[in-house]
Length: 171
Image (cartoon, rainbow, N blue to C red; front, side, top):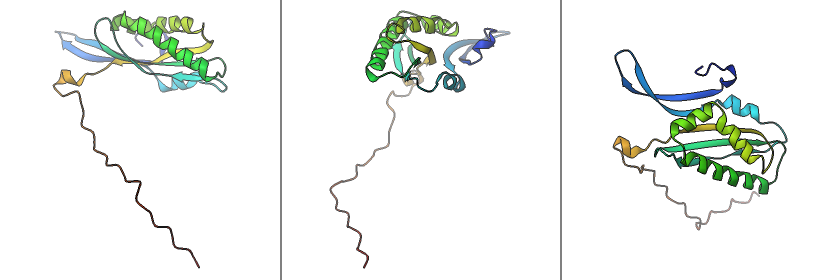
């Protein structure tokens, strides 16, 4: 455990080796995620769950993906859920685009971003859980010398105007 806090055992951080010095390896943090068991544990009966995915560019020009999970205290209707999603996107857009990748990662590990997000969203509807289940850099294929578009198999549409013969009647 990096933090030494047993309550944060459900956090998984990703690193990439960056270089090699005489006695040490240097790494760069590339992501943060919650274990699936921790996400399952937050959901209970008669509650609503909101999962979403957003791509943002941080203030240090890194393309990132962030996937929040919200669980309400009670079952809610679609208008409230839509308003929660809208407020969630507005808050994350403001926060992520004005902060560096490393600072966002630090806020996630210390649970600061989740608390701020829950405080902003509880004005719309009370939440029992507000977590970020995934946050990472998006790998751009152009950096590795490959084109950004990938080949996809060509799918031929089936003609729907063909007549299918009816089965013969049994006598």
